[in-house]
Image (cartoon, rainbow, N blue to C red; front, side):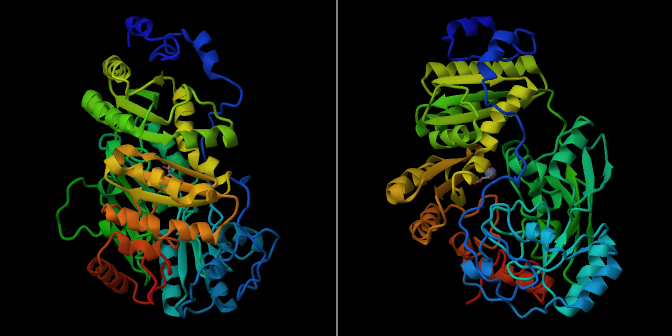
Length: 549
Ligand SMILES: O=C(O)CC[C@@H](O)C(=O)O
Ligand SMILES: [Zn+2]
């Protein structure tokens, strides 16, 4: 963007011009940014200081080994109609056997168990009495072989950042943590192939490959806590799908321990391999129900040399869509993210996180990121796009950053919406894929349907991927509000041939809605695969597949 453009636009339009910070003209401009309360910290889920809500003190039916404390999250078996399947119960002999396999890494203390029995959203709670922390694939194999023989149920757990209660036990399943499987195995500086154990934290991997001039092909708000194995097991989407595609494309190989303890070594680093069925694909998105992922081989793209982030205000959703079309046309290959949020989201991050809105108040906001290899070239493209967007009224206000810290500040407005929602009350979350033209209709429709019974109804998400995050809050969990939301939201989505889970998976809380997006024949085939790979059903039971009547 040249000075001619800056002088053409009113002062409030672009408070920050690309390159200005780099060129050292930042002082006065910076002051418009560094208002009190703006934070640049990364979101790390789970956040220990988040509140506790929707709770009541209940007896621990059949869960006497976990201590009861005030304001506990309601036990899953109390809140939901779910029956324990006939698995064995962990005995003292079992604990002794685990101790022989994992000396000093068999955890039974109630304090540690409390944290791993509850999901980070604090909506589901199991009552496992043991947490196992293997360090090697061989140890995972020995544990599963033992559990398989004894018919003991196992819940694999990574960073425990699931949005759908997928990573905590429903009853007393053994928790198998990947937290000590945290080593990088290899990285190839030419191909960009990273091989690592499943428990590596995404943010640590990002740092590791960035130090070598590459980036991870995925990025999500939970990066500070989530494990790569959990990302792959849930086929996590996030902020870079638009640019690098899903994990089905970027994961090159997996090592998986099957339910009976056998090790499946598909840890290939090849880009092309058409020898037989591509078995690794089965485990990507299988939510720990078919095997435990112990290592991942993933293709990392080169680190972009030039990154710009624009945060723009749009007067309506039609303009958001037209801005997206214009972006694709004008930014082409450098467009790396197109995220949107509504005014309700902005209010939430302002109110609960004290973040500042960097542009004039608008009904919608979009975050556009470009990632390329030539700053001058990218800035010219971005300037042409922005000029056109302003001239045609698609965008009414905006700000652009190229400096790392300022870009993070802009990204925080979008990435920290989840955190702000969690501070607003009990959250009803829907993660939906829809034709992009219809993406916001459901939000409008629900606001009218729910009226004052909901505290907040907001829509945001990965517009570039056709992925809406519809979130509703109330002061406390309300069965009445839930009844107004479900199955309405799912029926509405199915009516558009959308998906009831775009990127968060089904876990425990959404497993019974699979039928809204998949036909009975597909669900039957899924059950067949589960029976083939895990005939005793010990791996992450009560998750993903619908309960059988
Ligand atoms: O909290 C949500 O609903 C979405 C979380 C995450 O997928 C995001 O894109 O921020
Ligand atoms: Zn998302």
